Image (cartoon, rainbow, N blue to C red; front, side):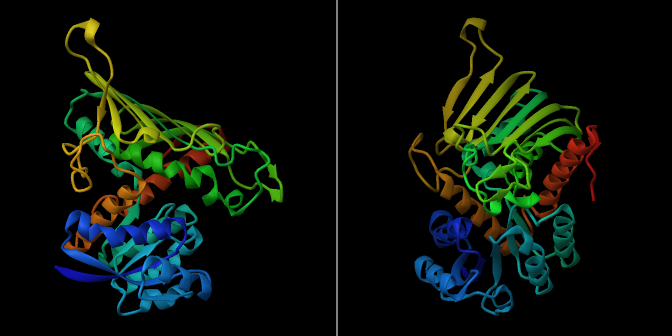
Length: 367
């Protein structure tokens, strides 16, 4: 059992989640590598020191270069604004330090491709932080589909809908400027990643993207509020997705439906410890969707709790993510989802944005 020094860039919402995960992952999963919270980086010396004290880091800095180059920092977690991702990753990869990078992976598709290229040049372990697909329920859904339990998949519908900007009087902030901070940059990557994980690569899309509230108190809105797309997967499956930050009443609407020739699956993140499964067998009068509560029989549930139906939460997804990252480092083999998987999601989104601009079907470009 070895110790590994972790440096986390960013101490806010996701920075705290990753710090807590690294503190807990060894106890939850008995990992071969045990994280040591070595250094945290924030935008000022004062905030960095606050995060150091609150989360239990050994040291703090306001300069990301100091953290990346520090010899006691063995692996890096990036939870900074996306416009900083590329420079940080390229510096870390040059030193062959493993990186877990939050999505969206860079401020643009070019950024995300450059990030993946940096990792590919020397084979350094890399991972992009798509956490929602790691719930025991969604892992089980993925397993059911792969095992053919619902037959041949014929249709997919997904959404990532929230209402944090549903109120038109909510003020303009950093979230209302920059394409990467809009709904297509912020929320859409999670559901596109789910679609790729559950069904496979997407071949083509047609989409509409719009800004509903073009001005807010304090300034103009320069990015999108919502978007919808139809798609065709490479395996021929038809699909559709919807993304919104103005979906009144939706708090964590990461939801999907998968229809097959022998059954169907439904999932909604607002009820993340349950999956609805339909099997086309038995008497017609007894058929219907069954609600299955997750428990020790489902992937990655037992390390958290021995009781079926007791449930896991958001933080537990990040702990599972930390386990996967540490395993990748220990085996020196990147695990899904890698930076290439991050690029795959961003390529679908880029095609959707271009489709909305040209009002035409777009082929998803690969790199």
